Length: 94
Image: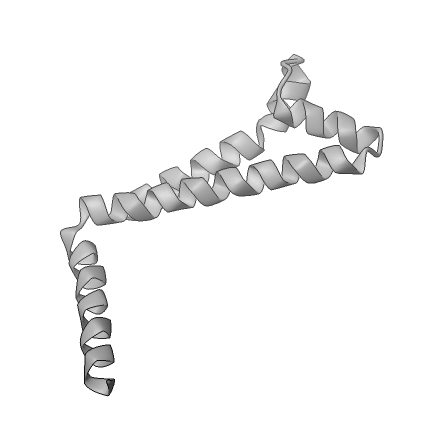
C-alpha cells in the first residue's frame, strides 16, 4: 500500500517538476510555458498552469485511491459496508 502512494505522489512530482528539465534541455512543454509566463509576469498563464498541475495531481491521487480498492479488497468491503449502514440508519429514522 505505501508503494502505491509513493508511486502516485512521485509521478505527480515528476510531471510538476518537469519545468526544470524542460528549461535545462530546452524541451517545449507546460513547465517551460509556465516559466516563461513567470518571467514575463503573465499571470493568467501562471494561473492556468498551476490549475493544470493541481488537476493532474488530483487525478493521480484519485487513481491511487482506486488502486487501493483494487489491490486490497478489504478497503472496497469497508466502503460498501458503510454505504449499507447509512441506508439502514436512514430507514430507521423514517
